Length: 172
Image (spheres, rainbow, N blue to C red):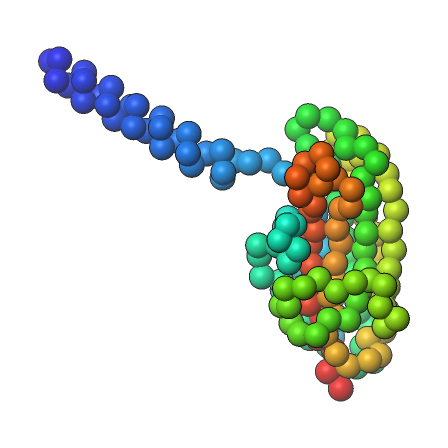
């Protein structure tokens, strides 16, 4: 009888130890939830929240291919999911900038003269508050573009920024 109790106690302790190593990583709550949808030429792709660093994040970016001259529509939403309250003075930056190749690791600067769109603002996110937007533009110039929505100025407090990104390939 004592052996069964000892064996049960051992497996309970082993399970709790394993949970201590596994659960914090998988159950980690993030500060922002982000959804970025890009559509054109009858297709749509969606990216969700990733974190930086590293600048390119951890998840591969979805790719949308359109023809030159097609209308591209972007819908985005960023939501405060921080379980401890408001996130104040958070920057939100949305841009579409040229890049060298699909999936490139270096995030292109929105300061390029060929940047298609660049919009940023700052706000206080009350608990569960969201900001959303829509942008429409004609994909006139063939090439590869990064469509990105990111938080700015929150790494000081949280150790990383949040973003969602899509690679847009415009073919002639």
